[in-house]
Length: 161
Image 1 (cartoon, rainbow, N blue to C red):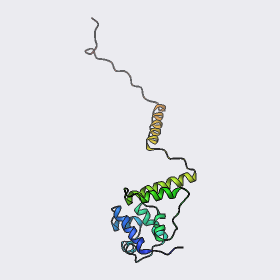
Image 2 (cartoon, rainbow, N blue to C red; image 1 turned 180 degrees about the vertical axis):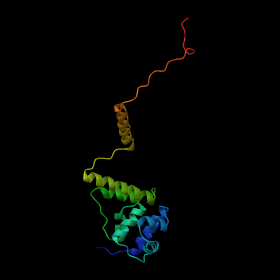
Image 3 (spheres, rainbow, N blue to C red; image 1 turned 90 degrees about the vertical axis):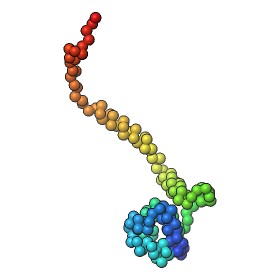
Image 4 (cartoon, rainbow, N blue to C red; image 1 turned 90 degrees about the horizontal axis):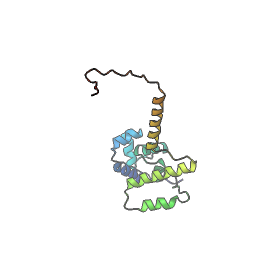
């Protein structure tokens, strides 16, 4: 197992927090840790556990694996074929760090779904069409009251010439 590089991990967490425009207090609240403890992690004074890193990752909306790799708790995983995509994305200077992180998270989730044999999820449009069809079918099967036709008054009737 690699040694824990606390200072660069703290710098990375601070960088991710600032790029996400989240205050230290907000991240501490969403991660379920105290403000002083999170501050100490960012300054490199504390070594967070894997569980705390997972909570921080959740608060930052990044993968916990990313923080584990940064902390040296996990070796960077490269599946067959994924290295080319990840390397190209990380080398692209036209894409910001925040967007790179989002794209990598999406890419990894697609790879995980494919590896697990999970069928692609339906789109919101497809789901809403299915729901609308279901509602229409339900309305049709429900008996409705038939109203009796109203009689026209004598003033509104037309007479034939």
